[in-house]
Structures are given as C-alpha cells and as structure tokens.
Length: 562
Image (cartoon, rainbow, N blue to C red; front, side, top):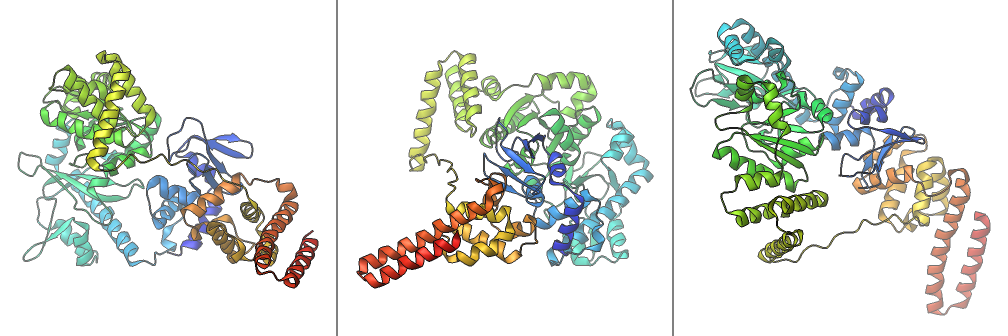
C-alpha cells in the first residue's frame, strides 16, 4: 500500500475532532477541544485536540500525535491497520491501494478467505433445518442470528476445502486460516457439523470462528487456532457489537460463553462480551479499557465459577479497572437464567452485583479475621490509589476493623512482599515540568512557523542544540521543508519527540504575534552561550589576542542578529 498517498486522502476527508469524538466526549475550549484522556485515569480534562493543527496532546500523561497515532494507541493497531480503519471511516476504496509487505498481503488473503467462508456457513444455516431449529430451541430470534452472522458447517469432510480450492486460494494460505486442516491423504474441514460463531475484530472483519456441536459429543466447542489475524488470548467475543453499548452504559458485562453473549444482547444487555473458552487475560482487559474502566464479572455459582471470579478479580484490580462481581445461583449461567426467569430478573441481579470486598467476604472459607486478611491481599494489588482508598474504607465499614489497622496490615504485607522479592520499594517518579529555555522556545517557534527554520539554522547549527530531542526534531523540520504539514513530521519521530511536538503546538510558551522577536532573542542566547563557553576556554589558556578577537566577533554577531 502506498501509505503516504492514502494518508493524504484520509486527511482530506477526515477531521481529527470528528475521529476522536467517536471515542470520547470533547467540548470546545477556545480554539481547541478538551476532554478526559483515554490513555490514563483522570477526573479533570487535560486532553486537548487542535482542529487547526490536526493533533492531540494530553497535558496529564504527555501522550500526543495525530489521528493515525491516536487510532493506533486507542485501538491497539499497527500503522497500516490504523490507516485501513481510518480509510474505511472516510469511505475510501482500498482496492486502489496495495500493501507492499508480504505479511500484509497474507493478511488480506486470509481476511478474504474468512469473509467468503462465512457466506458459505450462513447459507448452510439457511438450508439446514436441523441447525436452524437448534438455534430457535436455544431461544435465539432470527434478528439475533442475522445480527451476529451465525452459520453452520456441514457434516461433509471437504465442503470448505473444495470451495476454497475452486476459487483459486493456494494451499499454504488456506492451511494458515485454520478453517481447513491437512490430513494424511488430503485436506479436510475443521468445523464439521457445528453451529458457527464468526469472531469479528473491532473493524468488523471476520478473523476467526467458533464452532459448537448440537449434541453431547466432545469437544463441545472448537475455536480457530491462533493466526496472524487472531489470538484467542487477546480476543473477546461480541466486542465489535458491544463497544457502543459499553460506551453508553459506562461499563462492560463479561460472561463466559457464546450463548451467554447472544442471549444478553437479544434482551437489551448490549454491553456484553466473553473470552473464547479461556480465562480472562491482561490482553482482554486492555481491550476493555479502551471503552471503560468499569467491569461487571458474571460467573456460574459452582466452585469453578467462584475460583475463576477470584482469579479475574485480582487481575482487574491490578489493571486499575473497577470491578463488580455477580455469582449466579448454582447450575445457572446468563443464558439459562434469562431464558428461565427473564431479562428483568437478570438485570436486577446485575444491578445488585457486589464489590470486590463483598465478594471476598461472602465467598471466603476462612473465619472473620482470615477473610479480612484475604480482602487486604486483594486491596494491596490495586494500582489505582483512589480505588485502593475506597476499598479500605469499605472493608473497615463492613467488618468493623479500624482503618488504621487495615492500613497497617497493608504496610506489613507490602514489606513482606518486598523482602521476599529482595528489593526495596521503587521510589515514585515525579513528572518533570517542561522548562521553556532558549532551545525549547526556538523549537516551539519552528513548529509554529516552519518557514523560519532555514533562518534559524543559518545562524544556529544543529550541533549547537544540546537536547538530543530538540536537535532531532529541528533536523526533521529542516528535511521535510516549509510547505509540509505536521502529519509529514510525525512518522519520523519517536514517542518522546512526538509528545514534545504536540505539547509545544498547543502550549508554545511565547506570544505568537511577536514570534520574530522571540526567535532573535533565543538565537542571541544560544550564540552567546557558544561564545561564553569558548571565552572560558581561552581564559584558561591565557591567550589575550584570541580572547579579544572572540569578543569582537561576539559583538558583531549580536549586532547582526538585532
């Protein structure tokens, strides 16, 4: 794909304010827009978006960039994937572009295979009464079946194998899809005689499949193997359907199975997702954190369900997510509960979900003191200080133990963990304020007025900038030319340099109306610094003639710079 040409077309069609507004609420603040940063937890907005410069910057965590870098970070995509997503949003036909990477070419072919095979599975379902009847008996409506593109794989050993072969797909790529497997004599279909649940990424591309038998044979479920498109430990079923519901409701509901997700969505609980037959992972939680920091965990009421809830709870607290836990009655899951007792009853249970403290105290098999010790251990894992404070207060209130005692127990536990690890506690790293010295101000002026860069570098050489970041950015500004936009600069910068550029764009540190005066003042300071360093060297050497010549040169330079 000719990325630069595609990026130009995307910039012509999309505005960064519109792109970011799809993810978070922005409000006008002067010439810019402001909102809560999606990349760190904050209560006071420090995330700024500039429609004029087409960049964003957070003054809380320092992150910044353009619409492409925002999409990459928010959606956890690489550069080409972000371009594709923005191109689709802009209504650009990607057939006119081609990725130059062979890996990207394979991805395109695999996506094409999955899309075509899904059409076959859906057609199979329409023609197979037994499969359709199974889904109806499970309580699914035709609307839900269509919304989630459910399908059916025939009993035949090679329907999909022959279908893909007939359309010219090469065997190595077909095998990479995981839909077809290699046998001793020939390839065969993996998902034979199963209900098919297509798995979509956030761009609504089919990246894998899940298959369920309609009887009691084993294995009950099969999922696509990990491929370059699909990682089971990173993918949540239903997230592409649920993301808007999660944003609207302000929290995600995490259940355990395909039918749990489908039944919840069918009954208006549109913020429901599920891992694909695995325990929740940190990668799953990172996906959820793009949309919310609040998660309702729903587990079966048996011992296995309670154990899974404990494991997941600890991980959520460590990730800074705010969890609620619902443990259903034994032998019930969300699908069966809703079908037996109704969606209203299930929503009532969700509304009464317990906090982490409630869950630990209610499920602990130890006595009162032992249960409090367990709760303290969970609280110690909280990465969010405000959440930790809330949990301490709640534990004190619900157990009668004084706050001071709980805090002391937390300190003792922390010391024990450090001693076991054999290292002292890491000191807090203070956030360094940006010092607007002469180098930073020259860079700021160069970003605001790139046409001044040749004038600045004619007097101040690149080697005279002490800051490596400033020197690198000035070098790139000089290389891209005065007629280019900030988008032309960003791909050449690392994360630290990009953050500095976006920060200076929004907070230049000087009055733009008197930019020339500021530039000349800073040039004089940088040049004076150079002469002062040389003067000290000559004073040490004791050469008066060279010293006098240097002073004359400095006076001449300062006069010319006025």
